[in-house]
Amino acid sequence: MKIQSVAALRRLPPRTRAVMGANLVSSVGTGLVQPFLVLYLTRVRGLPVGTATAVISVIAVASLLGGPLAGRLADGRSLRGTAAAAMALAAVGTASFALVTGAGGAVLAGLAYGLAYGAMVSVWNTAIARSVSGEARSAAFGLQFVGLNAGVGLGGLLGGIFASTADPGRFQLLYVCDGLSFLAAGAVLVLAVGRRTGEPATDVPQVPDGPRGYAVVLRDRALLKVLAFTVALMVVGYGQLESSIPGLVAVRGMDARIMAWGFVANTCCIVLIQLAAVTRISRSRPAVLLAGTAGTWAGSWLLLLLATVSDRTAVQAPLVVAALAVFAVGEALLAVALPTLVNNLADDHVRGRYNGAYSAAMSAGLVVGPLLGGWLLTGGRPWLLAVVLGAGCVVCAGASLRLGRAHGTPGGVPAVAQVELDVRQNTDPYMDEDGPRRLASGGGR
Image (cartoon, rainbow, N blue to C red):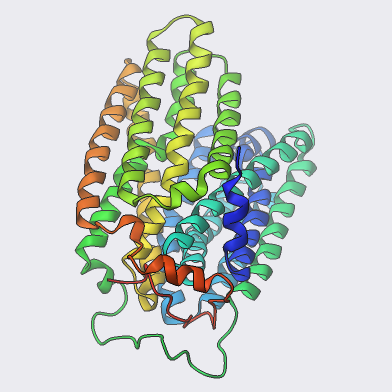
């Protein structure tokens, strides 16, 4: 099997690789603690389970604010300063969980981490989108997703080996290590985005007169359609992955270990798909990738429906594991398609705000999704969850094709982009954090 990701990674500019490396470092730290927050708050700190799950909701709601705020600061102030602030706040937020003794402290830590999480999504996407364009941009988003999953998977393995509810100090050390990983990643990221050089870049367009702040986002109907689609896809997909799908397993009385194996299969499939096919995926039209995402997620819900109506454990277990493996295919396609589509609509002077709006749309779907899934699971008919959300995925597949007709360039790469991309391979696209050299394709309309 040809590992396409190695060649694609080598073709990226050094500073793009540095941004992706910083993301990998922070992902390992995140994996140390991500699976254990509710367990830590309930079993170690003695908080009620309702309070612990409410902290998860606080993080999601806070991220709704963090993304747009970081996007505005990245455009109007400095991407470098915004990156430093976001990573420092993430370090403070996650490390604060080590000191939590009550509900108030947990909520404050969740607020800080949630604001930082939303900001980081905006910062990562803006930093990558400013450094490359066209097919290279799509490949960079795909490779970043590989690093994210590999890092979280490695961190989760290490955290699972080290964590122990009998020793609170172990959990505290994990949260401190997560905080240190954000500081280390932040230092690399700040160096990677660079600072303004003495001479202004001549090919950076001047900021035009017009709407300020997020008014420019609200006036872009094409972007608003993409954001609405993002919310819908998050609700029927990602918003259910760590909430309603485990809830379905619990409601049907399946062995809890099924979910553990399911998430292992999910992570392995994501990494293998991107390693083997990142170049082919990056050359595909975003609308086709989004249709593939929605279609594979509909297939995942079909497998979960079959597991739900079956009463045989020998049938349920492989169906759930297969469903999460199929879900991974959609994740791999989505990681390239949506950020590429958003950044193909943005000029550099508004790129931070566009990515901030995209971060907020994702967060909104991740808030609404678990609420909808929980409501469907409480009606005594758990099969309804798979039917309703599977139908929603089918609708999203059709909507993605309509988006494709509205944004018809193949993968956001104009005809001249590939020639210019080859010329740019050995150049460093960052002149500074606020005004990178304009790269030829994918930057605006």
